Amino acid sequence: MQYADIPRKSKDNKTKVIAIINQKGGVGKSTTAVNLAAALGDLKYKILVIDFDPQGNTTSGFGVDKEALESCIYDALLQGQDIKELVCETSADNVFLVPATIQLAGAEIELVSAMARESVLKELLIPIQDDFDYVFIDCPPSLGLLTINALVASQSLLVPIQCEYYALEGVTKLLESMKMVQSHLNPDLEIFGVLMTMYDSRTTLSKQVVGEVQEYFGDAVFKTVIPRTVKLSEAPSHGLPINKYAWFNKGATAYKSLAKEVVKRG
Image (tube, rainbow, N blue to C red):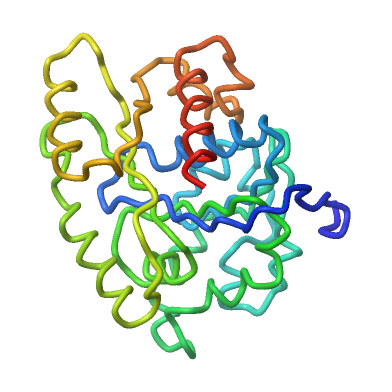
């Protein structure tokens, strides 16, 4: 597929560039990147997902074989490859992907000596981002140069938080990083929303954690909570978003609800 063959967004709204970020691992960043993008795709929005995590879970979650890839986002970041050559189709309708492989792990060190090292991703996205309604950047679970690049390239942040003990651990550091980027590199950066993930309605703990996060972040917390379900965990191994793997599952219903909230927030 050539980039020129991708249909452009049909809506007139301004492109939203959103980093999906939390410095803790295992909180549902990749799950959210895949399934929120797919749910918005079902609503006929054109979506681009940038897998910016060397683990490449979003890439495999969309059914893209990492072993078969000849190049990935690393090659655009540091080898001068045209990012349009990296955009590929996914298993979700209206959703396109710039994939990642383990090769991206080396970028953290190599970016140190790059010109305007914090803005490389932002510059890469300029020629293509306006062709999509939403661009999601799935960030690595760290606050290094890759994540700083994502913060500079984005307009806002979507922060998944798992319903468990120490849910807010590390969030303070993330907010400090956001303020630093606001001060020096991207003054318009803001929190788009906070998403509670892996919610178990049977436990008092999940309810307590949601209450704590709502008290901390207020209206920034999405009303939708993402439940812990077996199907959501299984879907990536089949290379499918939950709306393709088990459309009747409560996880699919939750991401559909989240997509509507995202659109409503503008």
